Length: 410
Image (cartoon, rainbow, N blue to C red; front, side, top):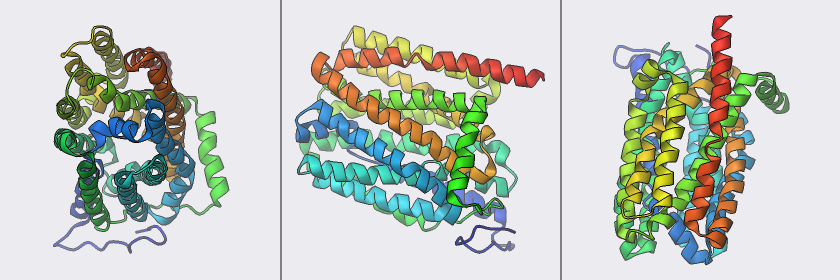
């Protein structure tokens, strides 16, 4: 069986450990790895922590910007590296940088220390993005289960949200006592994730990259231009996630005006549990209702509840905002599945990185602008402006649905 140069040797089946069982173990390890990397106790209060150190929301949000923009810079090299050296080694690099990121955030004695942590976070995100989805897809392809990609992606991605839910409640309670303690406790899960990464098995990939890196990158990038469906799916995904993530990070600053710090975790926990359930059932939901009706309903519902929460702020507002996550998982899986259908096997990780590149750049710009708006007009009005902008993917979904309907009739 062909395999990537520099990866583990081809697996020889035995009665004790058949190939299918080994690769399903790979998927379970990936799910556990997802849990550990996102079990970040400071996540629900990150913007409050950064604002206290930097003295402004603009500088606080700039830490997120730096993390995402640096991720954009590293995206293409790491995507190409994944296609070159293999999925497992790329996960190992990402896990190591994730440990360094949280350590530098925890030291956090000045803005400069936070910037270094953000650079490490950007590198970690770049190594994971594109690569981890490709690892899952390659593992399923090797056992002829690639048609179940959306189902397994939903279940493995669910672990991000389960981790965030647990970390949100525990982290906000600990932060109410000590921000320093909550930061240092966040290092432990990252160390565990690094250990899990060493246990992954490199799946066989007959499409090992053999062309020069520049040509490989050029061929992958060209497909985003020559394939209008892929280009539009990419744009919709970039706008949905980049704008949505910016609002999610700033949301704690709005909630703290209505609830005490220790209670912020309750709102985040409800949101993450909803997203976890959404991820888990995304496969069956998409099989029944299809991608575009689900994506359209997600945007309309989320905008309604967020506008009500922001225009009529009350103690109920954080709960309303939390319910917007209940469709997040299925929406993410829908867009990812559409993109994976358009990606080529030979350039899957590289194309995933190109997609993340656009999202990280847009996020970097949007989050800093959102921080500046918050300093000038207040957090509430800044979030209202953001939610208006989040209506834009509706137009793209409509065009995509027409493209897919047209192609099906040919």
